[in-house]
Figure 1 (tube, helix red, strand yellow):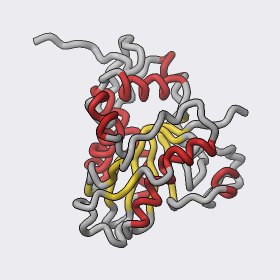
Figure 2 (cartoon, one colour; figure 1 turned 180 degrees about the vertical axis):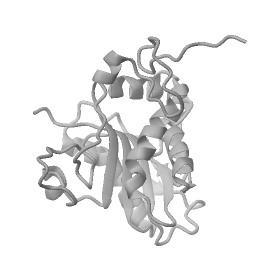
Figure 3 (tube, rainbow, N blue to C red; figure 1 turned 120 degrees about the vertical axis):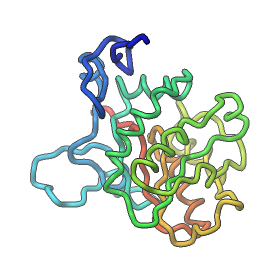
Figure 4 (cartoon, rainbow, N blue to C red; figure 1 turned 90 degrees about the horizontal axis):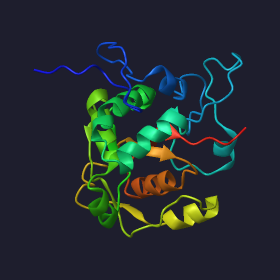
Length: 239
């Protein structure tokens, strides 16, 4: 039997075996992985400055104070840059399904404060056309594992896309929201028992929040209880 030494998830370089739960990133990739472990927005998970005076307080970023958010709380595991961006793109477009377990582990830890009794975990869905091209929904690969680690029910097909949408990249915020408007709905065959139950909505990246917004509205329209959001990475504005 051949035993291969642990390799960095992002670049493949050899790393020391830290045992169960090890992050398995080399020093260079670790330095470019911005885990969100300190003060953050309770609504979208974006990291916030921490001067020590807000301990124990619920913090909300300026964007969430000025925008209508149909979800109640949110967390993100990392900032969408550097190592996090490379890992998510590799999972999303590079058939790197081996990344799903460690990424889900990071997200489960970040999302733990959002857990409520009776909560359902659901991924943001892909349209069937895009799913056929990509072969899997990266959000569902993460959400199922997050649900297991948090001891929650998982409904991979709770949400469906009613129509294909164009890629969100390089669009204005207004265009992103318009692109997603009315594109998502609760699957009529999966809605049983949804009424009043809290939902943890899982996706890979949150930028403007347009996709999460549409998904949360669809869940609430179907009678779900409060919606919380957990994303692998949160895009942040340049300082």
